[in-house]
Length: 369
Image (cartoon, rainbow, N blue to C red):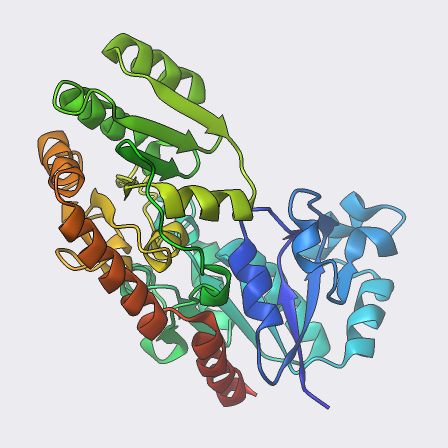
């Protein structure tokens, strides 16, 4: 019988965290047990066929129990019993705050704990500073830390992660889900997918499109996503005099369809004022898997997700003129788009196939047991 790994996320599971669901379900030897404090209905369907433990279902006062647990005063015996029955070999948490909770559980279960750092959990100044006792305690107590990119690995080292506890490992995407034929729209089209927050740099995309308006009068821009900046971005688009489709949220299958049809995927992420930066950017991999070239900034882990001049075009953060020039270069040259699209697909298959990456992840599991 395969060994059990507890996959811990405090809320199971956001609709945007397909990567967590896929990674657990595609492990070749270990069996996942998804565990969290409470359900997140937006993405719970991602793991509906997998075993899971939701602490809120095992508690009459889940909020109080969580507070007592985090204060180190008491752990609900039903929580422990449910996990003991699963007899896990280790706990794998995602994001630092979840990793801190996982350490407490691992200590009681007497199993090692591993945490994947994804981005904001280590880059934001208020989440992880060199002076933070909480961060130091986390690095002292966790068994192993996985960084989703070399950029995140460097951030972890700067914030005190012991080098012997750290390993860089790309999660990857399920390339078998990205098999749609590349069929571009009749008119030139750009697609953005992401949360409408400062880090995603949507304002620079709008400014770039405004510069391209006369040269490409029939250029269509679609923005998929929601967030706190949506209203201000809609206002900015109107002030710039450009037509933009703000499509709201979309299912994974709808996003794949739109990616396969778009001429270029543009997501000009930046380092936000609070330090938040892209850890890697799964949607960059998804675009390349569907043979859609990428235009973005050289920010965070994007330089690892996208091969500049091979599968996309990158320029310096907030350089709107260069961003517009790179978009125009691809819109003007269908041969270049096809070439970069093919390069992107090949690169994802070689470096970011989640099935290959899950097999490598299990060697990390084996090492810490």
